[in-house]
Length: 260
Ligand code: COA
Image (cartoon, rainbow, N blue to C red; front, top):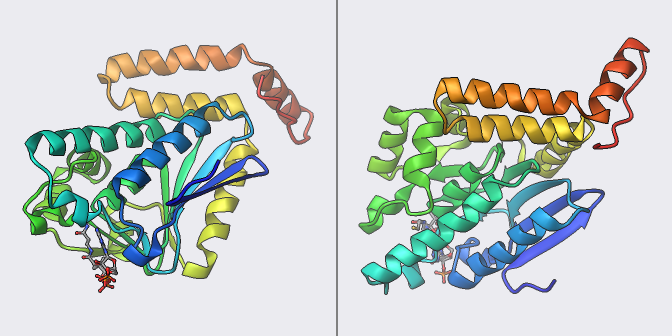
């Protein structure tokens, strides 16, 4: 697959998706979102892909938001269509039954912060900067930010970020629970790769169902979510991986999971 604004590689089960417009801090124009949507479809169906790392090209930015040149000319209908299109592709990433890590290597602003939040886990470089600066432009977040940020860090802190438009450091993002870990920039990809490899060494179906239980359960009532968890627990009990994992423990050896 050839892309103009994206890099897409797959090696040893790990897909690395890189936003590649460093001259404009990887700002998201229409073509970039279209290319991301093609990649998201491949991430889902490509059996060579077991896990995903999303990052930005260059040393300055993860993604510095939607392309303000394109935004500036939008009318109401175009604005709504623009938001729905971005929401759809981010939700496709969030719904992937494979772990998706954001390796945030610089500015993650607006649609960039929203992209990181659509990922399952976020690792940030020390120089990462987060924010939802849309109000500075007279707009609001439109790629899920008003919904994912309060779900991730709580309503008060989310409203402070969204209403003030202020940028926050990686350390502050860590304190708020917006990111899982902060590491030196030169260790970012290695750290994300190691975490993903650890996850991929576990029972593949267990990882998949655990992701499903957390992700879908969060949108249910606690009673429904508990029942959903119990159903998925029952399903994993029917897998060969479960038999192998428990047997390996009892035999004091490493498990050899087959994803079956
Ligand atoms: N859309 C379009 N172009 C963007 C962009 C965006 N979201 N973010 C950065 N760029 C461009 C700049 O216009 C500049 O282009 P130029 O070299 O042709 O002038 C280039 O990327 C480098 O950015 P610059 O502003 O010079 O870098 P900086 O280090 O001084 O500042 C930021 C970095 C991130 C603070 C600043 O670029 C910024 O505020 N960007 C907009 C962020 C934003 O509001 N995002 C949400 C959009 S909804």
